[in-house]
Every structure is written in structure tokens, then in C-alpha cells.
Image 1 (cartoon, rainbow, N blue to C red):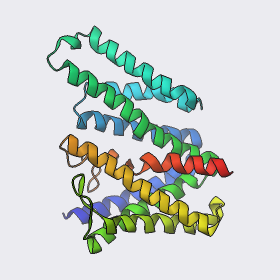
Image 2 (tube, helix red, strand yellow):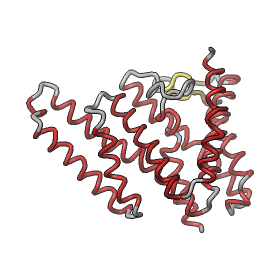
Image 3 (cartoon, rainbow, N blue to C red):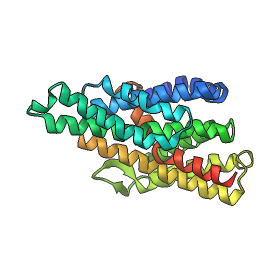
Image 4 (spheres, rainbow, N blue to C red):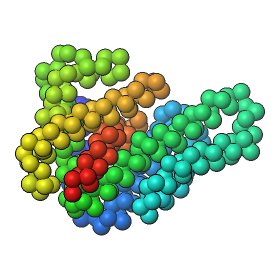
Length: 264
């Protein structure tokens, strides 16, 4: 089966389920869903950079999510640092410090903990927080990213000639970047009255979301190049892994939340 066909079939099967969950799940259950996605993403990250043992990282991330669940976001940075300390102590107590690969293993483990906590779990937490501003916002945000990714893919494939970051993501083009911006702008513009934005404001915010989404994609591509992997996993046929699907959330979700929370 061709890659595009597989991608489309998977999207058609999963999209209605995701839309239903984002639209109708109560806030606590949406938090649980996004937390599960984050734990899968962190597990993929640990596997991708060969940090071990893999099972430890979702457990640590689960512990780190406790202050987020109770809305104590100010406690989250010290909680992450505490978890890094606990991880180091655990490695030393278990005798990992005597191994030849100790420096690499402990450093990669802390990298997985901190990177996963900041760039995977935290952005998904802000998707959950969008529901506090408006119950339909997480879904609008999701549609904007889907439209951005879809337009970037097809416009880049049809018209892409100018490489954007060839050393990091060889298939990404300037034309595809314009497509990404057009897709997110269209969705935010179409939803501007529901969100409470002016037309001009919605176009500007849509443009920023498209650009930030692509930056998140590039950041994940950097990690994949360094770890010499094509996809974060093969969990989603035609789409790669969880990280490949949520990389555009990294910068966009915090930006949209703080922007809307600031103007409401």
C-alpha cells in the first residue's frame, strides 16, 4: 500500500474518534487522554535516543504531572528538577555509575526527562487549559494544526522547489511553509467569531500558529537526525509515531493559551 494511501486511510479512521473525544470529553478526562498521549510520546523519545530503562520515563512523567493536574504550574519546574535528581540517585544506587557507558546513559536519561517534560507533556497540558477558555477551543486548535500539516504536505509536494532546512528535514520546503501558514490561517479565520477575535487578529494568529507548528516539526526532526531514525515509532500507520503527530503542539499550544488568556 502506498504511503499516501495508508496515511489517508489512517487519518479517516482516527479523525472522527479524536474529534469526538476532544469535543465531548469532560475536562478531567481530556486531561487523562492528553496525559496518556504524552506518556506514549515520552516513551518514544526515550527509545529514540536510547535512554533507559524505557519504563522509568513514563512513570517519572506521571509523577511530574501531579502539580499540573492540581493547577500548580509554578511547582512544575522544581518538580522536573527533583525528578532529575531522583533519576541520578537511582542510577548511582543501582551501580550504573561504574559502567563504561555511565556518562552517556545518565546524561541521556536526564535529557529524556527534561526534554519530555518541557516539550511533550507541558504543551499537551496547555491544550487541556484551552478548554477552560472555551469548550471548543482544543478542537479548533487541533483543526488548525491538521489543516496546517495537510496544506504543507500537499502544497510542498506540488510546488516545493526551495529547500527550507535541507540538513535537518530534506523534504521541507519554503513553499510547504507557506502552505502550513495558509492552512492554519484559514481555520482560525473561519472560527474568529467563536474565539472572539477580529478578522485581522485571526489572520495574524493563524499565521503565527502555522510558523510555530513548523518550528516544532523542525525541532523533532533535529532529534531524529541526531538519533538516526526516520520516525519516532511505527505506532500510527502512514504517520509514524506519537511524536511525529504532536511535534506541532510544542510551541503552538502554549502560545495560543497565553495569548487568549491574556486578552480574555
